[in-house]
Length: 246
Image 1 (cartoon, helix red, strand yellow):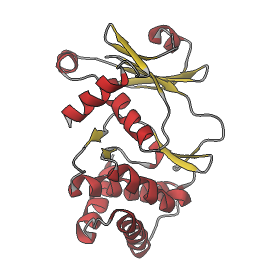
Image 2 (tube, rainbow, N blue to C red; image 1 turned 180 degrees about the vertical axis):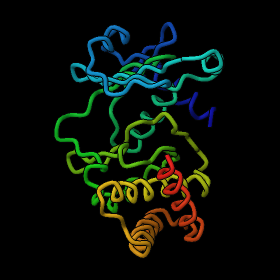
Image 3 (cartoon, helix red, strand yellow; image 1 turned 180 degrees about the horizontal axis):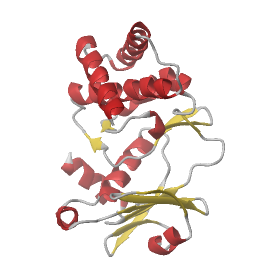
């Protein structure tokens, strides 16, 4: 995984690459901005212990916060999360899968293009979830594991599905293990079930099973991979219970 990530990053800054690398930053050629200054001008979307995000002038900005000694030390020895997001975004684009273009990636900041008006996120329209199985299958067959495949991280724009929030994404050039394929799909199904619960329209147990089976069958048709009905169902139920306990 790490080797694939590093190869991807090296390629993107090569002679014919689209990124320049200097002072610990990957910057898209032709892009110039001070991320800390841009964030001060942003409309803040989220400000937590781990991240601060905002939008300004067609940009989406994320700052990775290091609050606490342990987190600071841990971040100092890890590959920056923004680098991992850049590598995953590049691989998605190579596979023909939509995701916002990364403009800057450094140890503490990530800047991407902001999605335009008219973008529909699946948490607003969970009925679109079933058709997302095709692009998830394509993503997995391209060796990309998302890691946080909930409805808020999948969007629909111009007739195509796309992905955001690639902080947990991993690259598997020799193929994604079955357990991780199942985890991505279980997170998707459980996220959809939770969304209907919050709307006051919970799926029945039979309805949830039918929905899960339909997604798994469509996924199998595209990938030739079985996810394991019993294991998938158990994982979905576990994620739903964990979410409802919070």
